[in-house]
Image 1 (cartoon, rainbow, N blue to C red):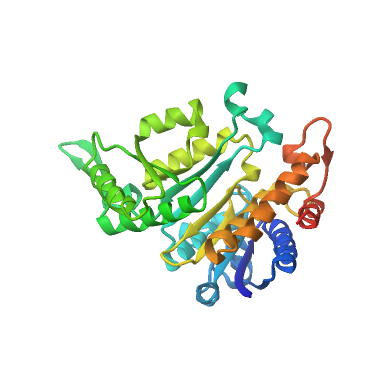
Image 2: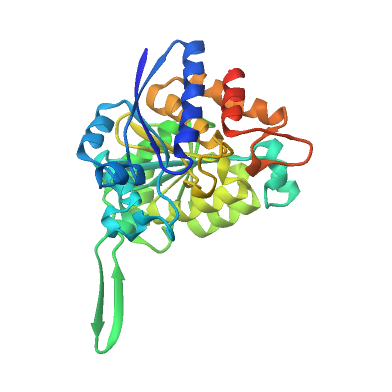
Length: 360
């Protein structure tokens, strides 16, 4: 089985962490009978340096022809890099916005997993962190308040700003379907988060999610108001499996969830369209201050690659083996500098990738 994967090494530490994810994918392929076929394209500052734009149409075409996209990181130091003297539409991050739009990536997946070996870094009380948690936040990515009509006007000498929150039932239905499908691969529970006691958009959200739930009797559905969900994430995160929510709520809740894990360097993410296609990337940035030093943490990118195997290729066993390998090396006491603690052995970026590959 050949996997046609477009890789975007990107900027900063991107090339280093993508190289380690490729290493681990190749090892998983040897063990589980698939062959990753990688094609690299330029995006972000790397593309600006060569082509003068953050993403070319040729690069978009290569990505569209792939089965999935694996990305490192985009951007640089906003105060010193010449990329940020360019107009906003020509800066590195504009390439990311463009590729999301071109690939119709409407479903954002942000897992928040607390590894017991890293529990000491969790900011929650020990009696809460001891229970651990494994959450998948499903955020609608292309609708809602961020994409509605907006205006700023002056009326009677008073400045007035308006932002419009709009969802139609088709936008809600497609993200809900993704949420239930992913719950089937996990603990089979969906918590749909809204503000249905106030907002019409949330009342429609709740109705459509309930309609979708009828087709997934194996999955338990509960509804939760967003303010309560924000509280429950710090009070009892272990109760959650899949959190399904709209764009702005998902933006806020996923950042909250990432912080209670204690280390953003461990967090993967994915953005999916209405097929099996997805773009997979770590949640962290390009860390230009440590680029080229071989000290970056590649685990988030490796876990993003595992998500790719699971959600784009249905290679659940191989994905599980990659995730288990990460847990094993943490249990053995290996750490990169960002997660280093007393009594552990610090390793480089490339050493970490090799150790994880060896454990598959």
